[in-house]
Image 1: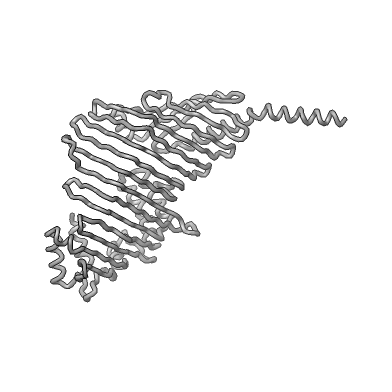
Image 2 (image 1 turned 90 degrees about the vertical axis):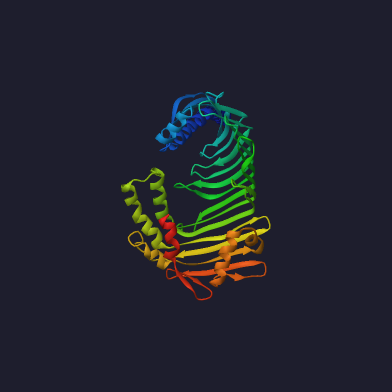
Length: 420
């Protein structure tokens, strides 16, 4: 009897081992089918064309079609495909599935992906684009790239952690103009919300050149960086976002050279529910008609009624030895109701401050800045410092209030911009 139990246990284990790849294959098919179905949105349609499930492996043929009419028209106009077929070779592991996928028309775009999906649906992936050359004679443009790579992992809840590496991209036009990008790298951790990234992202760019037909630089940016962090508060009711942009050097189209550009911008305490509704409406139709604008108004009212804060913690740059720095903060208090019906309420309720600095070298370098500073000095609105000039003011009661006691209605300052 004891031997029979042992034989039965061994037989059961062997049967389970033999059946396990089939079970993994079945579970894997359900995961893949659900994943493909969840990828459908207003821009792309995703579908499984054929699923051949075997004992230790499966072959899956999927199709991705651009259905957004604007994007589809643009792709067709440029002679690009709007439907992409992908073949995936899936292996059934003990606790996961691994897949190697590539475009059916791999000569058009040498894109491949290796992924490993756990039975709970969480997936690790590596996407590679081999050296690629594309030429569109109708548009007079050609594109060539070095090998690119994106790696990361994504959970069934949509949480994504990724890194991207793009060593170089070259775009050449028939008229002789060129665009070249060198060493773009990035990292992100978070998830796609309603039209915005909820989480953190960082990118760095070694150099971007835009050259005219004589190969003279008309725009250059060197050693640029971007970082952004958007998160909800502990209660999940308020959004807080901060972004930083920087560039060691920029050559602008008019020949101006900007050094050490920095922008630190933040928005805090934004009502997440109304913001999500606004973004959802806008994402569904970027060109809003009258009816859609009307549907936005209640959410805009709610957004301002709940209050929020905006600030430029630093905006600074240099022109040679000349330096410029600007900081400002604005606060819309809670209870600023019905601003879509009476926008003046917003102007009266908003409080804040601003500070602007011009170095002596910058004022001397640009006559039009000198003229403006001279006028402000006569009006006693700007103060001379050791190495430059500084302007400070407070914002409240619909007015810009300077340290010398002078006040100016905000509407008179904003009217030229509104008329423009």
